[in-house]
Image 1 (spheres, each protein chain N blue to C red):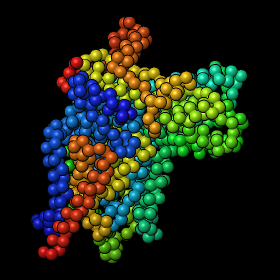
Image 2: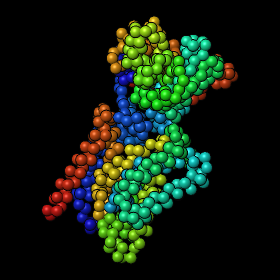
Image 3: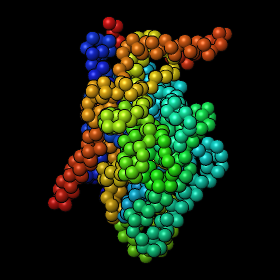
Image 4: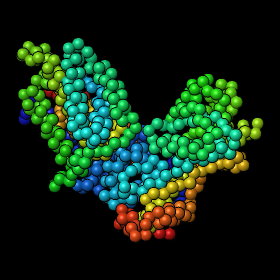
Length: 309
Length: 322
């Protein structure tokens, strides 16, 4: 864990991302432009944010409600936030608090997060349906403007991905509280012995995950300009896959925010690459799974070698 | 719909009217997948994208990206609301009205009707239902005694109809949204009630059942549907736009009718498990465009400028005229 020697295992997300990116550029040189990069990656921004949310929970657990939660946020953003901004923000804040309370509950009663979040996914999904029985809604003007902004030098998608990676890295890997949060996954007892209130920490972790979920929902509406009760249903699996692709593990607080953002980008890149190769979308989900297995296999090889050294 | 697309675009590609007409599908009916697909198609440099949208609104972001990149977007069947896209639809309101008209003709002395609705919340379901409601106002003797949701699926319909049948009076006719008729018939047969007049669609299994009933006991009805041939209208519209023609943004495609006397012939040409289709040739589509232009001219005031949002297509590079 020293800062100077970077193990090949940690470089793996970057390597797999680069390989796919080079293959994409080789197949479709149009992608290698300001507009091309934006088209390639802009729809991944909400997934990347959801992936960071998932990563926070995944220091020692897993969150199965990400997709439903982001969908609910998107429904609120595209209806309530447009019509009554104050009420909308209040509802979003309420959702973050609910997430935090969930974390505290999970710790207080020693519930398995996988079951609680699975149950919550039905509650979020039901609320989303109540708010929005049929797909529709519009994006708030400022949000649409934000997601279609054309910054100089690099396109919005790239700038946003860099910002998310940097912010998440600073928060989780560099800040004092981030270290404690990762400690929860490593050895929560020693964190407790050091004088931290565990239920508070759990609430903080889940609350932060909720914040990232809300950000994911906001950016989603800004990009798609509308929403529906199941608009982000694929995000649960995508976010878990993104964390794993990025070098994270379910336990021990071993996570990598930069890797997770790269993981999310890699997954969507795999989809585009297959489309450019004229491979039927019926195979795409399978192919994304294959990428996941390949990267995991490569990681296993590196870990073995590290252990031998 | 893919079969219709491939059968008819292949000759167009061969004769060089268009350079290529590749078809893409999505695994699940998710607008998010479709949006990503549109963005990939822009990157691949297609001049036009013809799309049956999974959502009327959730693709607008991606469609706008396409328009900004100079790509012509033609949505059909499932249309998008983005103003820059062309919209080609069936008149679902008319579909609802025609069903009621047929029932009024069959039952001039009044009838009890059962309405099978489609997928709740879709504009198709809303429009069709509204058409039925509007037309019923002209026929006070026709009554809708119950309404169930069939989600456009045979099995869901069968269950839903079977569920309400015991509580219903005698049913003379069943209105539906295409694709539910066989499920309705199954439910009625199981309940041993007299078979009502069911409006059919273009599905082969429905037509075959109808023909069999006709042979056995002279059963009569009509089939109304939105045939997959609408994809071909969209194809030719895209081709005309790329060729520089000024095409109105909204086009309505007529519904496909199969009447009793046409049934056996249509059925003979429809493969098992498939649907009967209406062929739209380039000439048909040019006629549709002309009609739309005429109605547009009739409805707009002479002093207002003709539709200014009509984007002139700058990149007809791949276009080769025959």
